Amino acid sequence: MEFFEVLRKRRSIRRFQDRPVPRELVDKLLESTFLAPSSYNKRPWHFIVVDDGEKLKALSKAKLGASGLATAPVAIVVTADETKSDVWIEDSSIVAEHIQLSAFALGLGAFWVQIRNRMHDETKSAEEYVREVLSIPENYRVLCIIGVGYPAEKKPPHGEEVFEWEKASHNTFGRPWKKR
Image 1 (cartoon, rainbow, N blue to C red):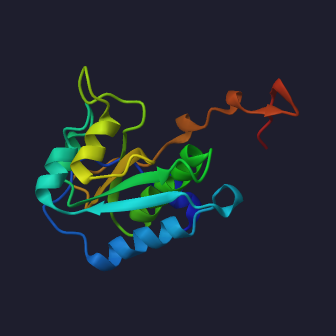
Image 2: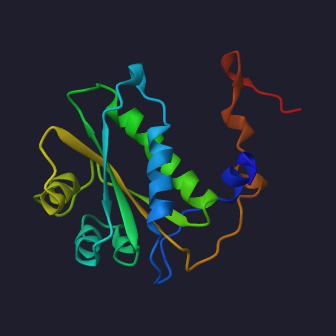
């Protein structure tokens, strides 16, 4: 599939078929992360592949909006060692996007569950909760969880309405970019 077609057709999928994702496809998703760029090539990330149903159910309670993880056959938790890079958030965001785009290209669906700066409940952050569920060391920060599986819902490709040309300037902020 051509890259721009992947970008246009990829949508967040939160409902999945009751069907396991083959190990070879999970390997491909991880390969896509290892191909991602990082600042000064420090590669501060670490990924936790979760395919245990009980752990997925527990992760689905990390925060509001994570419930789709309960039906996902696999999730990839994106963490990074904050002592290795001051831009771990940016580096980890790139790999999280690689996972989502690669999942779509492989015929899978995926969605991002934001964990960093979100709350599990009134007293505990979603990050603390995920850290406890998965025994993540303190120096590793949790950016997000990507739920992955075979889609049980169909969404249309993005249309022309997503192209907000007014948000693009030419040489100076506010000077409109003219699309040809």
